[in-house]
Amino acid sequence: MAFSLLGFVFYFNGMQASHMTILFFFGSLAMLTQKDDGLRLKQKKELGWGWMLFVLLIIPFLWHIIERVSQDQTTSNFIVFLRHWYPGHCFPSLWGLGKWIRCLTYLSLFFLFTSWDLENKRMERVIRFFLYAVFTMWIFGAVFSETIPTREFVVWQLFRSDIFVIFLGLLFVARAIQRLFNSGRTNQILIACVLILLMINFNFFFSPFLSISAFLLLAFFRIKAICPSQISSRWTLVRHYFWVGVILSMTLFLPQHFSYQIMTYPFYLMILILILFGGSRPDNRPAFLGREKVRLFLIVIMLIPFTNVIQYRLETRMLNFQTAIDYNWHELQLWVKDHTPKHSVFLVPPYVNGFRAFSKRSTIIERLDGTASHWRKGFEKIWTERLQDLGYEGTFPRIGFDGMREDDPSTVRARSIYASINDEKIRHLQKKYTIDFVVVEDYHHLPFPVVFQNDDFKIYQVTDS
Image (spheres, helix red, strand yellow):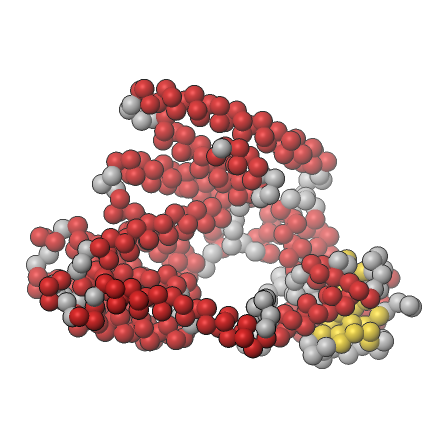
């Protein structure tokens, strides 16, 4: 069943299916290298049939890939283009310091939480071979994107296999939280509370200082649990307060890294209780730190992120969570679908994505179209040429965009370049790409008839009706 499902995944997401295949391969090695010969013989047969079924299922997919690759034109610009367009998934040499620290913190937390299960030999094998698979993908990803640039490996985006590290890590986090609660010790129950708050606030880990502080705090209590006899009670108390002070200080200086500001208050409360009662024994634990009361508190805390959504539903009576701009962008697309010919071609702001989703109409360029370069050789030339025609300069133009934030320089630049397009350039683009309509933001004025307008966008018709 597992191998058949893996085969079908290739027809939905070939990249993730490739990563999963490598995990399956190393998982098979883990099973085949067990010492129990009788069990290993049975597993060999099952794995053999499973891999045979998998190969049969993916033959049409592989045939399609081989046929497409043979028809593609080779290009030497793809890897250079991708390094400029978005290096995050493929080129570690271009990652910033913050991302490196974040990655190392994720791995450190993974090792920290899995350390609880290393005493179980079977679980230790699972973790070990899982890490073999992940590090193999990352090593190949680094070698064949940086040292020996190879398009076939780059398009696999092997570094995106980190999603499996995060997913498996979260399972071990849940197990760790369960252990901390079941320990009955005050400080471990409080650490579980802090841990849940950190997991809810994912943006917390985008701050290197906060994430490192969290790791040090959790690591200290893990070390204390492993070898309590080697840590004197005096030093335990000193280190306990030291690490609590570190994470509290970092949080006071960088509160904006909480996804929901209201979450900072229960976080401070947990830290304060940890300082006051973290060293107390189970029999001396205050009544308000009973398990049921703590669990009720955490349930309330975990509902906080949904308050904005609930409030939005009550105010708008809509099922989709949309900002005003999202709503107006959606409204524009629906109007286009109902009031324009199906063969119409649109020029839209390249930094706003998803025009085709509801309008069902063609555009000459969108920012996310650059992703097509991963599976169609030579597409980067077309994408680059069209951006240059719009005024985005450079051999490989970049369009930075972060919502409609006016404090983000890349967003301001992307919007100002598009807003500078005048009627003369529109006529040139219309002749070159047979454009019928132009979509602009509401402040962008052109000498053409307006056929649609709302609070954020408007549509000009540039051809005769």
